[in-house]
Length: 623
Image 1 (tube, rainbow, N blue to C red):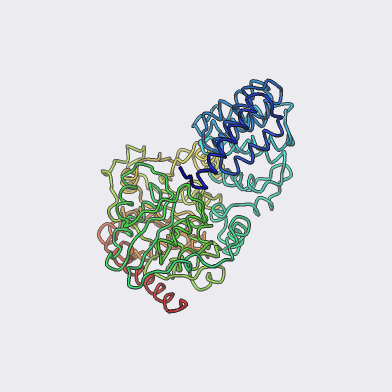
Image 2 (cartoon, one colour):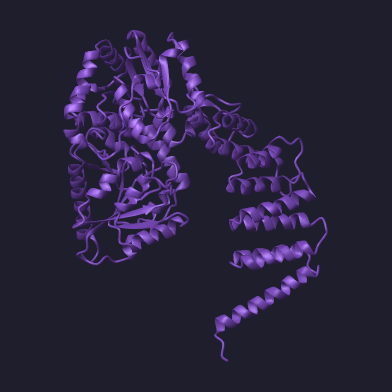
């Protein structure tokens, strides 16, 4: 029987592998030959043969060199995501030498992948707390840093923020010039309201912390658009691929006459601020003219919100586990005309997808209310309040101006029953100021302003989000230091969205944060009929709430300096009937204002998308 050449080659390969594995099983293979062959097979895609070779060699060899073979065997299993098997192999290596630092580090990662958090942390602690380290081919300090930094990362994810920060400090004392660690150190202090945020550590200076602050943390720390642009550019220069080839969208021709294809690119199409704002946007697109695609690597969180979002899509392209270049290729092959990036440079973003230019029109929206400096992002959806003329020179994107307000929202969000104040420990006769923004948006300057407001409005209190116990303790201490009784701060626990929306009705006036304004939160409180007082600054993110208030017909609640903000808040707090009139206006007319005319916003957005796509098609080669 004839045999094809590829099939014969596979048989020869299998026979050759079996012969090599037999030599290893017979104990006739030196360690160096084992490692060389295993590496060749692994890089050549022959992982199964590689694993069989290591197993045969280890089981037939009792020399001390088994330690290295076990370590490499565990590494291959880990890369194949066979974490439980890798754990067992690393434990065998540590049984031979309990002090083998690299095996402890890798074992920690395998335990983490299996959700064994405490065990993973214990392995890393055994490395960073060890007096002496047994290391092969590595500097002990590098292994300690690996253990400290990974333990700090995992502790932060577990919301053990104080422990995480303590390990970051230890890491920076060992090696100050770690930009990534400095970045996380600054942001974790923001989350805990540990003021001043820029607290030097050892040889790490205030200036170094400033330079290494992430874009998200920078947006909370400064209203200077030049600094925001610089931070975005630094990230792009360091992390984003420099693709110079032909744009991917030019490699795939689109048939004429088809509907315009809009692709929404995001890992946040779930129970997330972006996922809460956008369902109606997806649902209201005119299907006679547009086809809507989800380009998505979001976690499957099993929520009704996630189900609703996916139901609103014409096509779903799962990108989790797909590398950025291949993801861009798939988007181009799908013929996406307009790709809307809903993440920018926020956590979990994949900006390299945009770098390959899989769509002819690429637009930023919602996720990053600031310039991204991404070379693949040509436009940003805005309005003339969020992006005034003087701001444009410090943005790399061109604005797509919507007539009223940039922000879409969802008029179908579920609202729980209106609660009583007593349920949250709020006095019936108090004037309740409120801020449910995330604690990392709270700055020392704004908190001091809030304390001035409380001092000047007798009987008032401030209702804040209880994000974490360290932030709560720090804010109570800061209040006392400013002459305000700590019990005038009330903290609201995190609750499900329906209850979260309903409890806004208990507040008299929401106090916005600055420079990182409320976005989704501002939409939520206005939808529920509670006014918000904001301070507008020089850049997009510090003008978001002002845009919403202008569209809602309440421009008098937009202030432009800290003294004006404090003065206006005090005026309203001393005149409860004024706050009540704002609430009555919002209750009676707010939902009929342009802010919540979502069908009109979608039509305006479609008009702009169609204009840009047709303009591109006219200019395309061969048009």
